Amino acid sequence: MIGQSRSSQSGGSRCSDFPKYSIVVPVYNEEANIPELYRRVSRVMESLDGDAELILIDDGSGDRTLSMLRDLHQQDPRVRYLSFARNFGHQTAVTAGLHFARGKAVVTMDADLQDPPELILQLVERWQEGYQVVYAQRTRRKQEGLLKRGLAYGFYRILRKLADVDIPTDTGDFCLMDRAVVNLLNRMPERNRYIRGLRAWVGFRQTAVLFDRDPRFAGEVKYTFRKSLALAINGLVSFSIIPLRLSTYMGMAAAAIALLMMGLVVYWRLFEPNSRLTGFATIAIAVFFLGAVQLICIGILGEYIGRIYEDVRGRPLYTLAEAGGFEDLPHPQSFSHGVSEP
Image (spheres, rainbow, N blue to C red):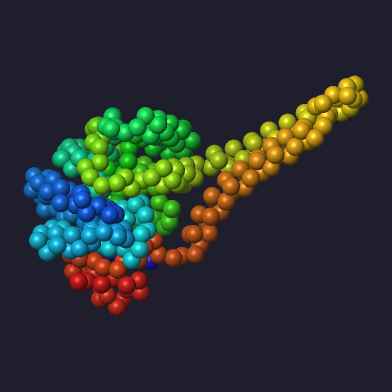
């Protein structure tokens, strides 16, 4: 696996010329945001107390994103980039960035500038105080609809109650992680990765930096309702077995209701033979109810079994088509997944 081969390098002795800070940003069709993103991040990098690198991961973009990353790399050697052979998803792109990050502290953030790069300086301050994970916690979401804010509010609180670990509410992937934490994440073999949950699971000293989330700078929202729902289900299934227990409870409830209805039907037949409640409608309602319970339980089991199936296949998390700025990569032919250095 590409990630595993790379993480074994990042977990060993580190060269003295490696940067102190790594900033990891996944990008997908973000040509409208990249110039402003680079301008703001580069100003932050110049304000840091050590060398920094900016790692941009192109998640199979269909616009000019990749060519813009190549240009930035040529203009500024601090900018390094990875390009996936196809779209593998946001969480996988973040994972790839962690595999290739070389800094003692690694910052992950989104490319739409809803995560303000200037906040990185505050994250670094808390890291220097001794915290190994410093996550940005949203206090307000600017220019987001009431429905989206309500769903996000409810999801984070439900997840926190059901999850096996304490996952902070109103937090995304915008955070700073110490090298020790990154090395642990890189060694985790999971395929369906929920980064904000995994960083809570590893432990260590963690703290929050509060901020108001800005609206997207330019372009279209990449996390549609369908993708957000998939991420929510992934987070819940990855860190809780409550859904499995819920299916058991639903089955017991359905059995109890079925026994109750059987008693009612016997009563109606004996004492109220002319009642309309003993007809086809009652039977149909019972059948549909039990069928719905069964399908829900099968769906819950399918979510867990599907993750087992994906893990046992042993396929790599991602395939790289191109990498720029990583001169210490092995020769391209030694990668069976198509890494090339331009």
